[in-house]
Image (spheres, rainbow, N blue to C red):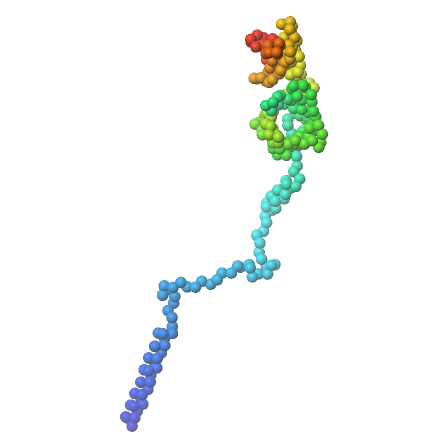
Length: 253
């Protein structure tokens, strides 16, 4: 009897040992170690757009601030309907030169009108104007005759008009007076005075005269007689006085 019991116990122990061996064998072959222990990279989950799968009504947008709305509205207003400046050129008379000759601008105190006068002939032409920032638009003689210039200010009484035709015209403030109250000799008037003065001093009438703008704004009158240059007078446009080619003082007016 004892032998039978011992035999049964031995068989159970053998079966148990065989089962444990199988379990250990299966465990070592079926279970993989973690990737970080094998030096492999752990697969990363694919990222999706957090808003791409949302319904259109659920997509969030950044709120527009009041400052941004004001800035955008102002920008659109400036592009669509620019407002002219309420401040124009200071009232009064301005001397001007574009390299080819002198002229005078008179700007009225309404900040939108004036007149342009030639130093050569004294003829004048009225105009209206508007200023948009640093751009001035002149309507010379008629509302539909528009000419544009960029205004480059040196100070409140000095500026340069960069005209759209390529001319650069320097403007210098003279005085707070109307053009009608401003007396000066035109270049044509000084030429006539120089011809008379030359004839009175030489007894010979000149063939013709030529006028140019000299240093310091003086009007230079060249007198020609006998087919050649004869004399030069450098004259002040306000007094008709100056010097001849020898430096002698002369007064023609």
